Image 1 (spheres, rainbow, N blue to C red):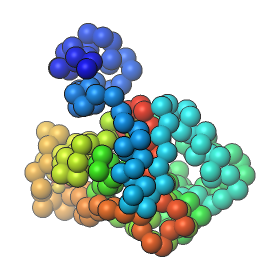
Image 2: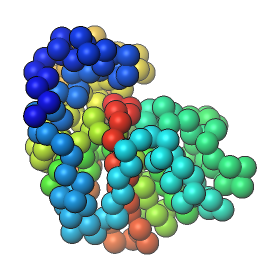
Image 3: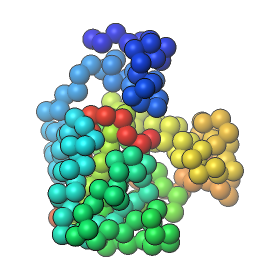
Image 4: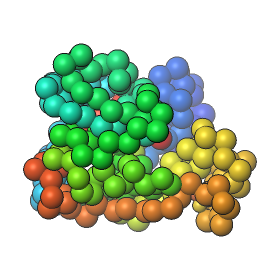
Amino acid sequence: MWGFRSPEELEETGASALVAEPAELLPLFERGLLNVDALTRAFTSRGFAFSYFPTANEAARYIVSACAGKSVALGGSMTFKEMGFQEAFADSTEVHWHWVTKGEYYQTPDIYLTSANALSESGEAVNIDGTCNRVAGTLYGPKQCMFVCGINKLCPDLASAVERARNVAAPKNAQRLGTRTPCAADGKCHDCKSPARICRALVVHMGAPKGFEKCEIVLVGEPLGY
Ligand code: SF4
């Protein structure tokens, strides 16, 4: 057991120099060391491929290699932005990202890259979307889909993963976008009915969709995105 019980204790170790939200790491310390074998079983038993990389740099190298020579599309993702994409892709890879080319949504690439708002240790991926191009790309159309998630998004079970998506990820995205929603003001979900609501679909991947040649979960042992 690591013994960190409060954000203040983590702050004293200098954690804020490494991660933006040290408090997000507390559940990981409470649960103890990562059991990669158990996670691998949880996801692969549901038809996902599963890979774990301790660092974002290792994961980025793996993703770039997997995408070489293929057409690639990205959903909106702070995770990929923090990992240095689109710059990380070699010139030989055809990349479509609407964060780079505004208004361009390419839904039938060889590989669709996205993160998830949360993963469960029971092997599910949870995403909330507004425009819904991102969740659409994870359901049907591309040949392959790859979810890339930092360790801060791993939750003990499906209920806590949905809770994270609704009450952590969505409010932070609303704050990033500056939406006129109550969560942008106080960081909590109010299940608003605002016209500016960014939560229009809640998608739980209970298994790898049948239409994909491969649907992979890539877990990174560092906090990424939100
Ligand atoms: S439902 Fe409304 S209040 Fe809740 S996170 Fe989404 S936009 Fe914010």
